[in-house]
Amino acid sequence: MTLYCYTLGTNINIMKHGSISDSFKLKHVEAAGSCFLPLNKSQQNLTSHISFVSNFNKKYSSPMMEEDKKMLSESEDYSKELDVAVRAMQMACLLYQKVQDTLVSKSRCNDKVLFKDENSLLTIAEWSVQAIVIWILSQSLGSENISILAKGDVQTLSKTNASELLEAVVKTVNECIAEAPRFGVQEYKSALGTLEVLELLSHCNSVEAPSARFWVLGPIDETSGFVNGDQYAVSLSLIEAGEVVLGVLGCPNYPMRKEWLSYHHSYHRIISMLTPTTSETWNKGCVIYAKKGSGKAWMQPVLHVNKKFVWPNHAKQVSISSIDNPALATFCETVEKANSSHSFTEGLALSVGLSKQPLRARSAMKYVALACGNAEVFMKFGRASYKEKIWDHAAGVIIIQEAGGIVTDVRGDPLDFSKGLYLEGLDRGIVACAGATLHEKIIDAVDASWSSSCL
Image 1 (cartoon, one colour):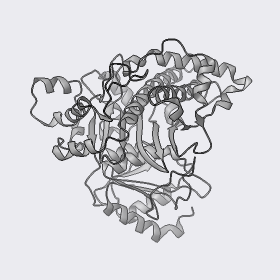
Image 2 (tube, helix red, strand yellow; image 1 turned 45 degrees about the horizontal axis):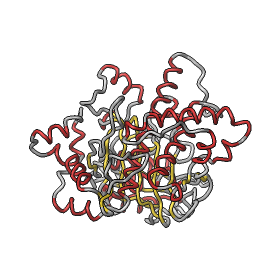
Image 3 (cartoon, one colour; image 1 turned 120 degrees about the horizontal axis):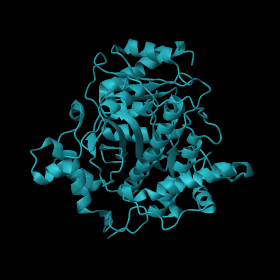
Image 4 (cartoon, one colour; image 1 turned 30 degrees about the horizontal axis):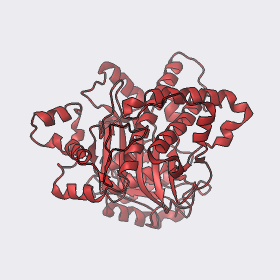
């Protein structure tokens, strides 16, 4: 049965008698496995679009066997929602990259850049992304089924003194919709007006979980990194009955070489100018995603300029590292210091035997690094007054879990996403590991040294 909707277009067969069409499953299987097998001509055509510039392929799993195909077939729940969510994140990444390029260009020219000002480019982009994501979800899944926990709500943008900001948001939203066909999304027949954009944003709630089933849209999670041309991420996840059932992270600047992860993104920009990215290379930028029960996590490149999105967009399966020896493991250290204790985390890492140089990563990059096997450990212990927001963790948690990793609080309990905006009841902090052995060692070390943490 062909799904007719604005966002996926009339030519895309997504569901057939309640399940994923055979063409979808075959494409996903071929995209995941063909780069490891002897290629015939048709397979070469399928995979020639992407070639890695490093040994990053080694981090991916072997070709999908029959049991893998069976597991994929058995895990068809949320496939439609995941398809739509990935397309939404691809469009969000495109918009945010345009804004970041503009901000970086202004800083080079010594122009004044408004930092999170009410009418700044970043603020306009964040509101526009909210509207675009809601538009895609509503058109594909039905607006009556869409409720979203997000940073902004419609009351803020409806105020009289926000008319200039609202006008800019409406303009940006319509510019994005004009590019929708590139993403397999049918363009709206006419431009959206002010009332229509406000109607879209009325699906947002910025305080509490709006229903038992709701989407969580994370804002740019590292504002300083974004404004300075460095790493950032945007996320979208679906929660049912307090459990994350799918998650998507868009990471436009994530480098495909592990050794590049420790460099400031300005270095990557210089490299990109010297060796421009083409359709034959994948140097940076990814959308990584997973759904409940699949036992798989997938990564696909952000869409290249002027390229057309064709699902699954050369997706490759990613998996966690098999390293369980602390001396060989890489510890992912958070860059942000305001809401966590670096000194306690560093001391804890040494006590466990994590002696390798830590990988300093911003925001949700830590979850991506673990899922791709670029690191084995991430831990965050917030100060007593700080409360973790669910949009900073929901997508990353399910991606790590489906890739084979473990994410809990210090008590070893799963994170609770049922209490609205915040992770309530979180015991001391978050521990994410590539395997049970490392996880157990860190939990034990935290218990032994917590009294001296000053947290």
